[in-house]
Structures are given as C-alpha cells and as structure tokens.
Length: 280
Length: 280
Picture 1 (cartoon, rainbow over the protein chains, first blue to last red):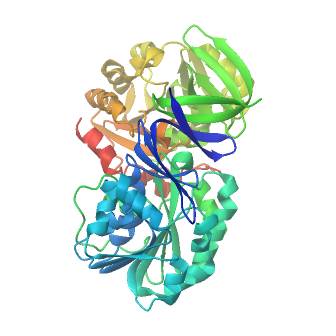
Picture 2: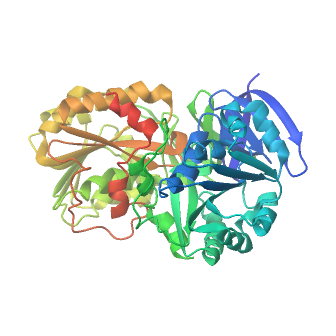
C-alpha cells in the first residue's frame, strides 16, 4: 500500500512525499510532533503538520542559518539558539573551534527527545560539553538573562502558535540588548515567493528594524520548504554584511552548501524579493 | 469536485497543484501537449506530463536564460533560440533594443499554436518583426545554417525523447561553429538536487566542454520545477563570466527576477552542486 504525505504550501499547492512508515506521533504540551520515514528524503520531522526538516536536505537550512553570520565574525565565542530543538543548528555552530559556549533555549522538551530518538545525525550535538540546554520560553529567557552573546539564532517554527512571539518587536529589542556590540542575530523568515506571505514577512522585517540598526535578508533553495525558496534575516547593530568583508579565518571542513563565495552572494536578492523588504 | 495534478519529480516526490480546468489536450507528432488552469499558478503548459511553465513563475526561468548572457554583451545584435516555442525566451531577448534579429527554431509547431491560444503574455513576442520562426529540428538547423549569432539559447525539454539530441556533443560543436567569436550559448541543464540526475548533468557538461572553451553552471530557484532548484549552462569560447565584468549599458525595465548584482552571483554554486561539475 502506497502512502503519501502532502504538505500544502497554501490552499492549492502541495509537496507530496511517498512514506514508508509513520514512525512516531506525539501531542506535546505545545504542538503535535510526527516522524515519518520517507522514501526519498529519509526521516522527516513534522510539527503541527508542517515539515520542519528532512534528513536529506536539512543541511541547507542549518548551514545558512549559522555559517552566513559566523563567517563575518573574527573570533565568535558564544551563541544563543532560540528553538532549534532538533540539534541541527547547534551542530553547525559547534563546528567552530573558537566557540566555547552555546545556550539552546527550547520551549518543548519533546522536540529534543524526538530528535535524540530519531535524528542522531542532528542530535549528537547535545553530547557536546560546550552546549547548555535550557527548557524555557525563548522570549522569557531573552528578557531575563544577564549574559551577552556574539550570535543569536532564532531557529523557530512559523509565526503562528508558540512561535509567534519570536517574531515580535519586543522580542527583537530584547535580543538586541543581549547581543555584544559586534554581534549578529539570524532568523528564519519564511518563503518570499507567495504574495500572501508578503505582509507577514514585511511585518517581521519592520519588527527587526525596531531592534537593530542594520537588517538584511538572504535566501536559500530548500526543496522541502514551501516554493523551494526560503528567506533568512541578518540583523546587527554594527555590521552590514553587504559592506563588511568575511572575517573568520576558520571555516569548517565538509560543508555541503555554504562556501565563502556564496556567503556574500546570498544577500543579492531577485527583484520580486527586494520589493518586499524595500517597502518596510 | 477537487482535481489535483501531480508531477512526480522522481518516484517518491511530487508537486501537486489544484486544477480548476483541463483546458486543452493534444497529441502532436512529437509529444503530448496539455494546458491546465491551476488555482495558484495560473495557466500551466504541460508537455509529455511534465510542467514546462506556469504563468506565475515562468519569469524566473526566462529571465535567467536570457539576461544572464545578454548583460555580458556590449551590443548583442542577433540571437538563435532552439526550442522555446512558448515565446517566453524570445520575449525577454526582444526587450534589448540592440537586438535586430532573433531566429526561433521549434520542431513542434503545435507548441507555438498552443501558446498563441492560451499564453498571450508569452506568445505576443511572435508578433515582433525582428523574430523569424523556423519549424524544423534544431540540431539540423544548427548543422546547416551559414548564419552566425551573438547568442544561442537552448530552451529545450528534458534530455529524453525529441529533446535528447539537443544535449549531445555533436550539437554543441555545431552551435560553437555558428557562434560569433565573443558569443555565448546558454541552456537549461536540469535540477542538480537529485543525485539520480548527477550522471545526466555530468554528461551534459562533458558534452558542452567538447564544443566550448569555457563552460559555467548557474542556478535559479523555480518553484514549479523539480526540487525548486534549476541549473543553466553558460558556454563561450572567449568569455568567462566569473572573470568578465558585465558589459551591456542597457538593461530592460520591469524585470522581476534578474538584476545586475544577481547576474554575477548566480554563478556561485553551493558545494554539493560544485561537486557535480568539478567531476566533469
């Protein structure tokens, strides 16, 4: 019997995947968590019916969220990850020898447990002694901590449900106040292809600008995310990635997507995407 | 009643579109031609069950195939389009004031007729007096013509069936011999995401290298093509797009994807794509 899982990008477009087995289903305190074994993409993590990652293409998302900012920093020492309970973002950040402290604040412990059980190629990062896991609301953590970070990565779900607060102006201001002067925040900011999302994205970038002096968008091609095109924000109070040179003398071996030539080019946006953020 | 059209990118992954109406079906001498009215992407041209274009996202493919090479040319006068029966590639080339002659060689007259009937935003280019349409096998035309062109664009279907010959070494050599010294050939070269296609793409690039001194790959995000990521070849005997500056003083107004900053950046490939062509 052939089973297909279809995630609708909107009411009338979907990505459909042949599924070998539905490995896991859980209703956590915050959301539904499913793990599918797909025929092509390997295991798939699905939260609230939306694909969060697949084993085959997760490298693109995780490399873009981390190496793009880290290559602009000469000697990054510390990072705060908001969300990122699958461990993929932490895995990439921990590849930097200079990084001696990573704090990962995940609201839903069940995401971490699921990753530990089903996604060892991501969750092995939880064994790294430089990583501290805090089970808490990321917005609350950012408001209350006294620590300052070189890098903050918002690796969240979509701006609905538990993830919504992580796209607010107040949250970004709090992030800005716990970033070191030369620090950078990156965040996933949805697909810029669908016009329906245009006001959502514009709102995110408006909110980011209330917290940070410079806010830039960058892009990547991610086959299992809606429309195969995904956007990220790069926000800083001192650094403009379009003007600065890449500064990090170290680059991890074995990256599958990111390289230094690409690292600057991801900020060059197609006209239809430029229009979205030029209006904010 | 809800109708969905699903194009499988491979055996176990598909893109599925809600369809309002199946507008047209034709078995031509060479292939099946269908036109669907989709709920999201507007009208869709389907050849041999594969999506060729949709009204909503065709601009990405057509702009990349044309403006990337044309912006490297100071004063392009002539272009040869092999395939391209929908008219979209011709529309973009004809935006250049310097271009005074475009020859479009389409093997299947029915594609042109279908476009004229259902895709006026592409096929209006057939009314331009600078465009000459030749209904013939593109490989034969290239072998026999005495004319030389500044630009050759291979806007073909996939390398199976009638399109196969347009990816052969012999065809590329013939193209090279009818290019002006400073001329450029561009071609669509499939999706680099699926490893199954790796040998197919490697074969295309090997064949290109038998005809041209410099062969580069460039990329674009196209939501309705497999894996949302598509590759193009830029081949020339005198010009390396990674070393040359953009030379065209003219750029058309109103482009939705291409801009000059992006025009150079599209050649910077993710590592997993670089690997494919580094092996050729």
